[in-house]
Image 1 (cartoon, rainbow, N blue to C red):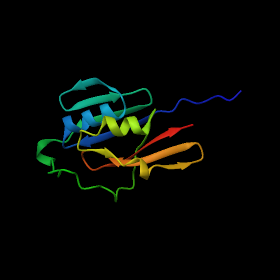
Image 2 (cartoon, rainbow, N blue to C red; image 1 turned 90 degrees about the vertical axis):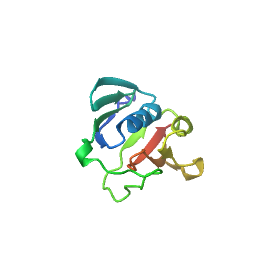
Image 3 (cartoon, helix red, strand yellow; image 1 turned 180 degrees about the vertical axis):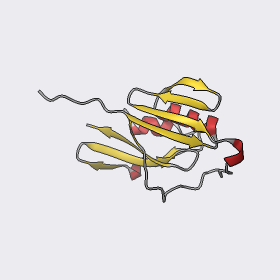
Length: 129
């Protein structure tokens, strides 16, 4: 028998636009806010968890709308979702995005698509067959 291992992506992020970024990840991951306090929230979904901290005001930067992409970062968080189309639609009213269906790629049993959160962090969502 083939045993499918449970996977979970868990990342820690600092956000200048704390509330907006928290809502983006809640919608993207079809998740719930848990363990919240002033300047912190755990955004917990079935397969993913984002631990979000607010950047202290004295260190905050001015994030443009749309945000400048932080595409030179050596990190790209990847989140498994039930549907890339659902994830794209869920965040469509935010200042983050998942690129259009024409940008989806398939490799083996995985289909994936890049996007970015409201802070400009480049992310990827994927599904597996």
